[in-house]
Amino acid sequence: MTARKRLLVTGREGQVVRSLLERTALHNDIDILVAGRPEFDLSAPASLATVIKSARPDLIVSAAAYTAVDQAEAEEELARIINAQAAGVIAEAAQALQIPVIHLSTDYVFDGSKMSAYVETDPVAPVSAYGRTKLAGEESVAAATDNHVILRTAWVHSPFGKNFLKTMLRLGESRDSVNVVADQFGTPTSALDIADAVIAIARNLLASGSPELRGVFHLTNSGRASWADFAEEIFRISADLGGPVAAVGRIPASEYPTPARRPANSQLDCTKLAAVHGVRMPDWAHSTKTVVTRVVQPLAASI
Ligand SMILES: NC(=O)c1ccc[n+]([C@@H]2O[C@H](COP(=O)([O-])OP(=O)(O)OC[C@H]3O[C@@H](n4cnc5c(N)ncnc54)[C@H](OP(=O)(O)O)[C@@H]3O)[C@@H](O)[C@H]2O)c1
View 1 (cartoon, rainbow, N blue to C red):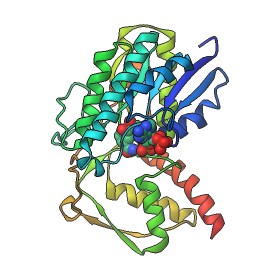
View 2 (view 1 turned 180 degrees about the vertical axis):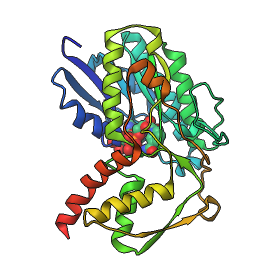
View 3 (view 1 turned 135 degrees about the horizontal axis):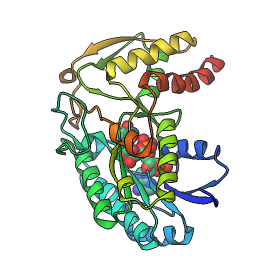
């Protein structure tokens, strides 16, 4: 990018939004604009286009979503307005401004029955309300504009907001052991790495109108883990730092019933992203260490 570019990101306190704010600060040719509640409310999609147009962005990162996976089972209509209808309105606004949109989606568009990592062309078949509404979001974005990148990511953690990693560390402060599901597999992914990848992809989209750079891509850290593997790694790193520790009891998902079904395997193959956009993500354990260190060090200082 030669001239300064204006990236508009949706949401305010979300993990990906906060990570983008932190990472774009390292790039002096990028200005980041935040569109969030109350003036930018995805549950009222009609109001969104005006806010976007007046911000005059060069690219939109559509990162805000209804992300409460279990709650969505009881609120599918609200989740659909936010994840599908509003996503479509944002993409239409991008099309009207003739700018690209990078839209965040999820591994939960898959049913989890594949034994190996999912590629972008594998059939989608969500097994939860959240997954169905996010898939509908992908469809509305693609229908609104060809100038899009849909990034399916998974198991997001960061020093910000709510996530599994922070929950484990909080539980480790008060409990000796926690039971964690050991038969669902995916890839823990740092929102800080997602932010770096989004910036690289944004640069590519702003530099070239090539259709090859557009479409659906998988974006996770590399490797594969179960939730129990992830929890054990979190506590191993935390122990080295003098932070909270708990023993991990490995249980089957059948012993941890939740309102929403989750895929048994949702590992995503990210080969296409590396080949087309040149983005290679670190190993999940490496990025887990970065995030645990940031969460634990202030905790340890306060004990
Ligand atoms: N978290 C995961 O494990 C995961 C996994 C796969 C894919 N993803 C996808 O990745 C993207 C980013 O996820 P994340 O982890 O950063 O999400 P998050 O931490 O749960 O944050 C959600 C964001 O959406 C915003 N939001 C929710 N309802 C809204 C509304 N009605 N109007 C305006 N903003 C609203 C929130 O606004 P406030 O700032 O006002 O609270 C917040 O900024 C999402 O598209 C998500 O579907 C996430």
